[in-house]
Length: 449
Ligand SMILES: Nc1ncnc2c1ncn2[C@@H]1O[C@H](COP(=O)(O)OP(=O)(O)O)[C@@H](O)[C@H]1O
Ligand SMILES: O=P(O)(O)OC[C@H]1O[C@](O)(COP(=O)(O)O)[C@@H](O)[C@@H]1O
Ligand SMILES: [Mg+2]
Image 1 (cartoon, protein in one colour):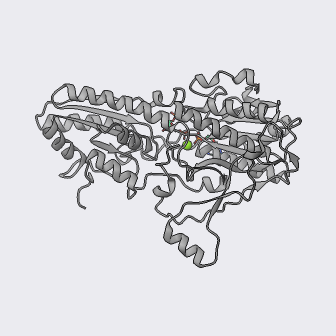
Image 2 (image 1 turned 120 degrees about the horizontal axis):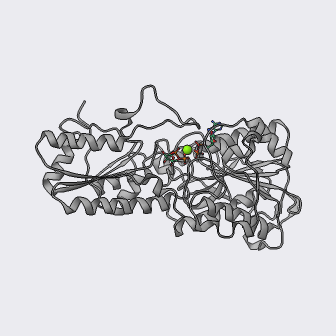
Image 3 (image 1 turned 30 degrees about the vertical axis):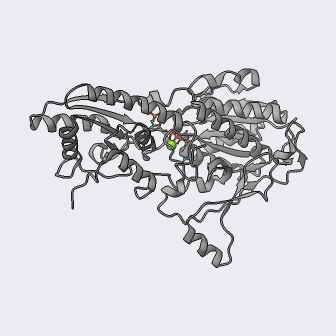
């Protein structure tokens, strides 16, 4: 599993103080079912040292403190819930992402075959599925129902954006007697999951909430890579290759590709590294000037004159200072609505070269929804399988308020409250970004102030 997006390399403050304690509903006393090979069992003693900055670690150890470590994910020898009685819910929220169906399938198959759980309900259309007024019926999930869903993109359960009353969500969990809730979603879903977990605790209920990080943006803190990201990058590369072909075919051809990435430009950056044809990669983390001697347009002109073609990749959240509405607008989930930077940059390029009398040909490609609605690629398919399995092991062990994460090359449990503390973004001083700069050859794109 590739780990080049290690969030600790992206963090400015590598010396993270994380509360790594995982909450539990009670003592796990029931022996795990025989279908699970005992050699695979892990327990709470199995912890993974969190890879942190060496200087920070030295400081921690010299103070006599322990090195920060995370609970390892995996099947436990003893579980909390009785497989013959436990009832489980699954919900998918937020934007689509390749691999959601793989995760749903993996959860259902693991519950059924490894633990013998047969009461599994799917809530439809995200958080709306818990709210009676929407009238979305729950779906009974069995291996037969989910057996082929991984061949399709999207989510078999449907999704939605928009806040729903947490009290009503927990009322529904109580009414249906759900004891483990698996929430597949991104940062927004995790904030909702945290609130649901708090409401459950307030009512003194024994319901586990387990989150699985989903988003093509790969912007979740304390996860190396979210599932679906790899597939999205692969598709993005195809768009870039086409843009390059178009640009090279004509004199002064420009291929401009806009990719998703609301606040984090990982798709744009990774696709740039993968294709090697990109000359300018613009991401939300980086400020750039359009005009001026060292601005983007002047740099683009230099490139065009030297090589007669250019490829530009722009993440949708880049350059928002030029296009965002004032005051900003928000979607139903509270995410800021972005201005269309791709269209804006295209028009600026056309204007600039018209003024300078250089006849350019610009091809603008916006593959946005195509890269997230396809089925998962092999890499993501394997990854999603693991995520679903580890989520089930954590839930059956009675753990709660956690996210299953792949971090420092291990599957681990991360408290949700830590995962929502911040957003993972590209660190412009990281070796990862340096590699992007080396690949594009782009300069700072900022005029001296
Ligand atoms: N702070 C919050 N409190 C409660 N619910 C939230 C919060 N933020 C987001 N949500 C809900 O979580 C769901 C998913 O959020 P969204 O931002 O759309 O997607 P994602 O989880 O992929 O980031 C939506 O139904 C949204 O309203
Ligand atoms: O689905 P919508 O509402 O058009 O939103 C598009 C946004 O969703 C994303 O695909 C990511 O959304 P999530 O936070 O739900 O994973 C972004 O890349 C994009 O900005
Ligand atoms: Mg999100």
